[in-house]
Image (cartoon, rainbow, N blue to C red; front, side, top):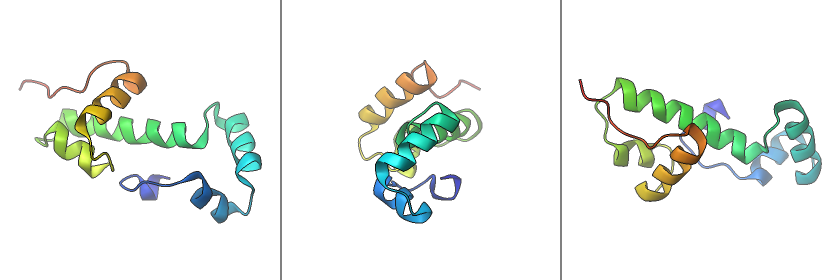
Length: 92
């Protein structure tokens, strides 16, 4: 997942890598992590996006696009749901 953080991955693509059915893979993944595979992947994306917001001059729109979110408003809603705050650029 880390290697594909800037791409969108489907559950089917993940399952093919590990030779499991989607239901079996999801069950095992959730047992180990506490998250569904896709929620975990989104969590990784949002953590990385948070770092970019804090440490780069990239705009929210550019960061959203970098992580496969064509709609910056949807990205903002997912970010707020995952991180707990709205994505903002810190004032330096």
